[in-house]
Amino acid sequence: MRHHILLVLHLLAASIWVGGHLFLSIRFLPEAIKKRDASILKNFKGKFEPVGMPSLLILVITGIMMAYDFDVTFTKWFSFSNAIEKVVSTKLILLLTTMVMAICADIFVFPKLKSDRLLPASLLIITVTVIGVTLLILGSLVRIGGF
Ligand code: HEM
Image (cartoon, rainbow, N blue to C red; front, side, top):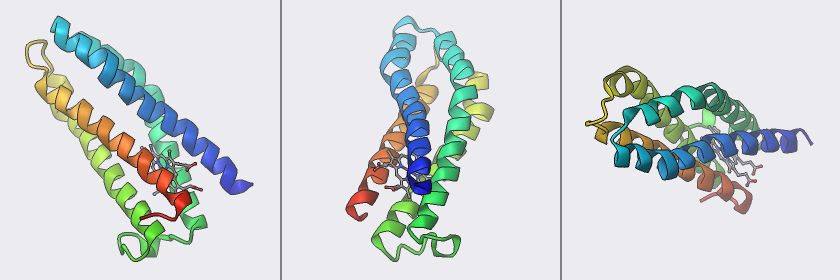
């Protein structure tokens, strides 16, 4: 029951994180590029962050707790020794990549974002979205034994 509650919280947070980024990539990013309007991306960021960041935190906490249920404890991370542990370690690497990209977005990309220079932000948004979808697919592999 405990694991199932964690899984439901994990799935809710994943819906917000991945759904938000897909919506941004499919709906707002093309609009910002078409209208050459950086404010569309800045507005989305400002509104999504207060919901998206707690979701990412919930994903990390519930993910690590569920990994412990599969006996993938801290000492086994990044050993790539069995199928489930490979999924968890790959997820952790992608999660760290996402966090580094979020910091880069805040420090380097968004402060310099201009309507005639949307390429760096576009690449960042698409990469974080693809990583999010990959994390979701990796998660779905656990129930079939990992890879
Ligand atoms: C953006 C980040 C993440 C997303 C979008 C995500 C998404 C998902 C999804 C969709 C599932 C499928 C659950 C199912 O098959 O019903 C899942 C399962 C799982 N995730 Fe994540 N996840 C993320 C981060 C993490 C992290 C950081 C960890 C651990 C370090 C983790 C560990 C797990 C585990 C262990 C499962 C298997 C749960 C089970 O089948 O009982 N996840 N994840």
